Length: 262
Image 1 (cartoon, helix red, strand yellow):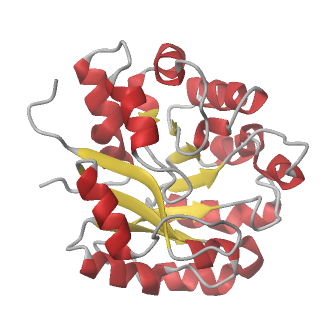
Image 2 (cartoon, one colour; image 1 turned 180 degrees about the horizontal axis):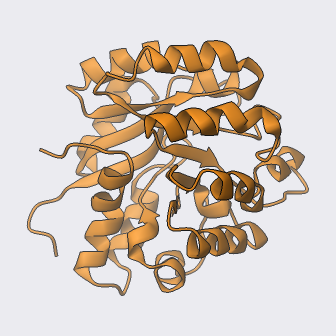
């Protein structure tokens, strides 16, 4: 195995969320979880920005970056219904070391992923070089808004902006959603996926490695919705080589999000 643990959790959240009862989502709480699982860096978006139309979350993530000694890096949440202020906020932050990229969530923001409202976001990412982490999931009878985030909806933008690095959060969810995500990653070299969240499918990691190769897979927990332990064991116990485990656990995230690893 690796001589020294080095893990990047590429999909976490901070701050309270009224929709769920969860563990401590404060900076201190996240750092305790990171330390308990040998996670050196985390790529984070703000719950209030995702769920309550509370800006991009960058002010709160700046504080998290400082409190964590640079271990928590920020994703600016862009709501397509409030583009002007969101993009202005990010533009003022482009020279900040803690900015890792952009987060979009079509389901929470009630805007289909292929809607023209997202065009300025993709254009901005293309010009600035910022990667995009997108919430993706499969069609769900009990959660109809997930249909706004199916991976196939991103084909429009991936074709139009081939230089933008896109990460399909949650690997498209389950069933048809995951099949769509695998198809997109297989066809487009600028697309990767993470498997954060409650995707408890049998032999998920080795299946993804066979389908899209280890170079296109990022480890993520979706903390505090689910914790790092839920997925770390799946990587560490998977019947794949140590070099592939290193790529999944940190090297791919460092490349996609341009993280300087010390």
